Image (cartoon, rainbow, N blue to C red; front, side, top):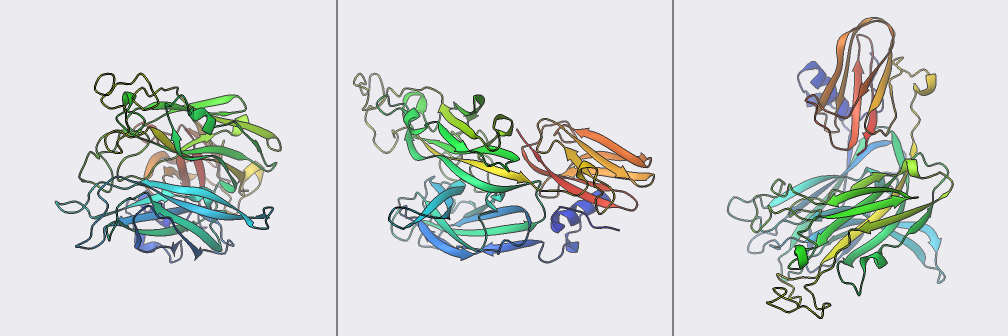
Length: 459
């Protein structure tokens, strides 16, 4: 029996077991996932970025996916965590190979992950530590050889209190449908003030004109954005949902930046108001980027005009408003760095370009397993068609599962005649519920063959 294609062996083993009805992780082979350690219990307080270089794989292996396992813990007694919710990030420092006028290397810094620390998580049955698995596959082409990383939490607590941070990278072997090859920073503003007419946020978000490489097969704009500040008009920017829009050559997409699932996260229960919905983040969660597929709006080899806007807003409860009267028109017209803080957004945005990874069996070519399993389009929204060929009649089973190995849809399980077959999938699970955007796998098993592929569901 031939091996499955283009899928991490750990996922393959789990998928086969799920199809058979009994998960059996003991069959996974060593080396399916390569773990790279960076900081281990790195102590952070007083908002000091930590920068260091770490050895990563040499780039000779093809990776299906790369996961950053981000773990935070509290220092041991009598010390403790910072009890307040703070923004934290991991950045990658990329040497472009070019130099400036002074002969110094030109470096680019890409935010690859953002988290918000929980409120107090010690005592009273609270967890004391928590972890997130963050997909950083879009940066896999930069995560090789010697990698410079920055570890940061915006904590303003002194002494021996703070956070212990562990960052481990998991490299899962396999071939992705599309491989990233370029990242371009678009808008880099950690404190873009919102609602002050004298400092319009539009000035921080100019139109960007970017050369699109000729080998681009797939392109997306990534927005990592969180709103901060409270006690203002409409309680912005932390506690007010606002529409954000991205544009590519005149085409536009819109999303309300808001998180209403703050009551569900691995750092709970916590002290404080961790359950309340917020603008793009929750205490004790990693921040989910807003990824927008702009492939249809750009032309490879030409320049793309990219723009980003946020819904119009004026903060009347601020020192910038001469008509503001504390206790009359607003509770407080002055920022007090406590219950009334300046509204702003922390914005990191990137253009990420991909090229398609050739897959045997596409365009009529014979794959090594003879099944010729392929789906088109890929990436897709809202539906895709999966095609395959059966060398002989018999029972065929086609399932779709996510990157954790969980079966989300059984598409085919029946006797079929020899020859070509196809079936459409609309991105829903077995109960008809729409699935989240991301990488999924489809796997076909027949009496004599097994094969699998990956695909990308867009939103």
